[in-house]
Structure formats: structure tokens, C-alpha cells
Picture 1 (tube, rainbow, N blue to C red):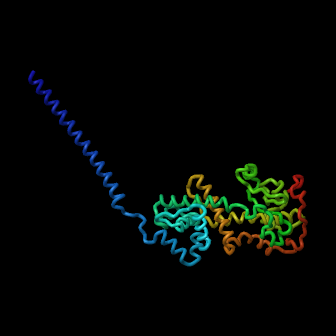
Picture 2 (spheres, helix red, strand yellow):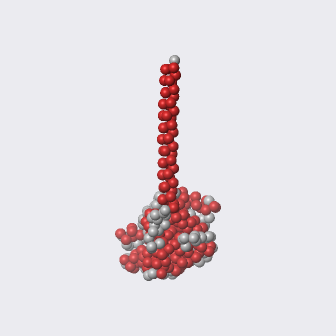
Picture 3 (cartoon, rainbow, N blue to C red):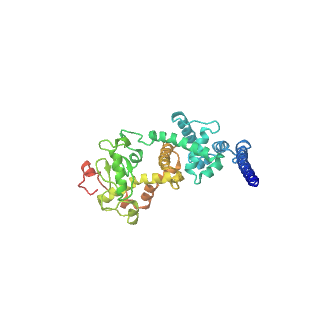
Length: 359
């Protein structure tokens, strides 16, 4: 009996000892986990080892660009210094872009334009401006929102009433007086039903505020769009695109003459899109932003394109908008193509818009 009790006491004592050891091990593990986390926090947030510690900060770099040779500002930000300063002033005074304690308006706008125009990743921008990815993203989106508001005011006709003939037509004998009522051009892919669907949606939805032409005015459209009142397309089943005229330069008949000058004038919009893509490299190599952000980037690229064109008439890149037209005139025999010897009458109002005509 006593032997049995002694055995039981020993067993209980052994179990208690084992339980104490387990508790001790558990407490040690918890203590080690706490110490590791405290040490990690201390090293990360108290004893910091900065990653972006170059003496050439983003502020210093932007200041050097703006105070250096004029070509540097144009190469890095794709606009001249005075245009850059004007853009910064507008975004700050009219569209609520705010400077922060560490990042000025100039640096924010410079960072934004650098990301739009210089091919590379966000990490390249981090290194260039010596900011963290979070800081780069925050300021990029702040400027993006401000320019999106600006876009509502600058992506529209300078003359909403369409009373005046554009200078590009008025001062060019190839187009005036024949296209004196033209107010713009719309581009699209040949025969694309998708483009036509989007186009018709834009016309039908009042919320989109499409600038409809006033009475007697019209847009030039290519053969991918329908022709109706206010939207003038080319003659069907007739040469239209400029490369076709280069292959066989002699123009025959009124329809070909009309199509030639229609295509020459309308192709300005194609070159404008090409120029915009060349200036803002991000359009050809979009970063993996959210879809909404990608849409906004496209809009702001067009807005800044318009801003530069309106504020810097000496920007040589815009000369390319008319180079194709000039090349055609110089390459071809004036007696075969030029308006001085090839005569045609301006289409009357009925032939312009009648659905019975083959245009």
C-alpha cells in the first residue's frame, strides 16, 4: 500500500517537473520573439540607415535643371523653362496643387513630367529624385489629379462658337477657301466598327459634352466613320490615303482631287497623336497602374500637349504636324497635283452631306 502511494507521488512529481520545463521553454520563445521584433523596430525606425542618401536630392536636381542650359529642361521635362514655370503656377493657383514640407511644387511637377516622358520604372524615379516609392507615388497622383482638372479647361476648342476659320486652313491656299468651314478632324481605324460605336456613343450622350459643330460647320473624318451632317468624309471607292498618291502621283477627276486634299488636311490629327506619343514615352510603354490611372494618364498627356502648343509657338516639334503636307507638294509635279492647275469646285451643301452621294 505504502509502496503504491510512493510510486504515485513520484509520477506526479515527474509530471509537474515536465510541465514546468515546457512553460519555461514557451516563455523563452515568447521572450525571444518580442526581443527580435523590438530590435527590428529599433534598427528600422530609431537607428535608421537611409537608402536614398545622395547629396543630389530631387530638389537640387530640379533646381540644377531649371538654372542650367535651356536644352536640359526641354530634354528632361519635354517643355521649355518658361512653359514649365507657367504650368507649375497654373496648377498651384487654379487647381489646388500644394507643396509639402519636403517637396516643392517645382519638384512635384518635375517628377510627374519625368515619369511621363522618360522611359523607365518607378525605381528609376526613386533613384533620380531620392525619394521612397510611397513618396513618388503620392506626389505623382497628386499632380495627376490636378492636371485632370486642368484638362477639362484645355481639351476643348479655343473658339466654342466656331466662328473663325483655323489659321492652318486660312493661310494655306491648298485648303482655303475649299475647307473654310472645317473646324477639326477626327481620327480612327479604317473600317473599325468599334471606333464607330464609341464615336456614336460620344455624340448621343450629353454628359460627355461633345463639341457638336454649328450650322454649316463640319469635322473631317476618315472612311472608318459614317458621313452625315457635320461630319465630312472622303469619296468612297476612290484613292484616299496619302501613300496611295505617292505611288501613282497623277490625280484624275474631282473625287480624287477632293480626297487628296481632304486626306492631307485630316492627316494632321494623325501626326498630332504621333507627336504626343513621341513626347510622352509612357503612352507607348504604360506602367502597370490601375485602369483608371492609365485612362487619366492618357488624358493628361493630351492636356499638356495642348498647353505647350498654345503657350510655345516656337516649339519646333509642332512643325512636324505639317511636314507631310509640305513634302508632298515638293515631291510631286505641281502641274499634276497642285491646286494652281488642278481645278475643282467646293462641294455644295447638298453634295457635302447627302447620303445618296458616294462619299
